[in-house]
Image (cartoon, rainbow, N blue to C red; front, side):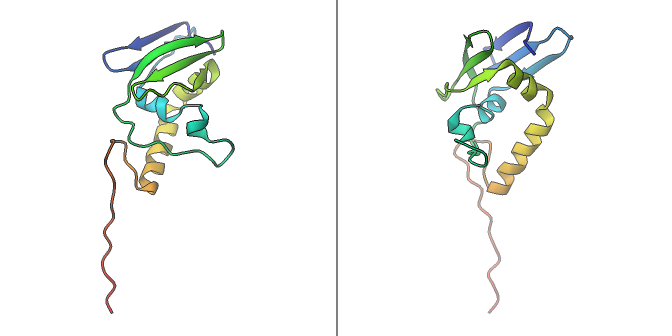
Length: 129
């Protein structure tokens, strides 16, 4: 579904999308960056996805149309190789809660954090001899 209005909020680096059916979504730079359709994030095939972490403070810094079918988004970490089709953006918007929860679960399972430069360490009790 093609949005009727697209707005980049420079203050917080988020993206707002309005649709003809009256729906409105605002997506953060972090959310769009971790779901970039680029090979850097998705890998080169099923099961080769690379979990993105440390992206909490990432903002959208630029938008460029890619033909009539997509947006190329530039982020504050200079990532700009993902082409976000209208259908993909709509999917990310309408499934935000599910995708976000899946991401947080994956981060936790991998011992990674949203914050840059933060590492999670789990201490174990020593075995009693």
